[in-house]
Length: 166
Image (cartoon, rainbow, N blue to C red; front, side):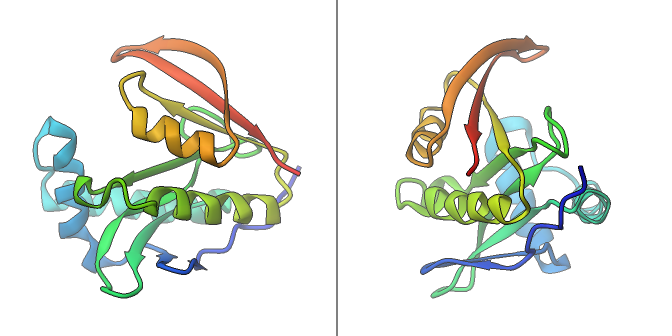
């Protein structure tokens, strides 16, 4: 089934979700470094952003940069991606700087992306989360995801959650 593309500009009371720009490269490198695997090179990070832009054109879904409306700063990303799922039933994904955790931004952004997924006519979304990531489980619970199954990959256990869309 063909779906209309998801909107690439979403606004919430506190956030703007928008396509990646070249000015996001340095902040995104810092966000990736927070994972504990080191700082990616500028060139590697530019390629990641270019790959995301190309995937968005190809699939009609996107991971979008999150910017706080009052401050104008990049705080992370949220959106839909094929990831471990499919274009028909994509994954919702988000990652925010640790310094903004606990303020409801992930839930606010994920809710906007969920609404955008509904607008495309999709019937179901997935999310995959490592068992240690309690904050992500809380966000997904708030937006109506339920646990489906557990699998393993080269990094260990992966919990799959799903949400049926109206």
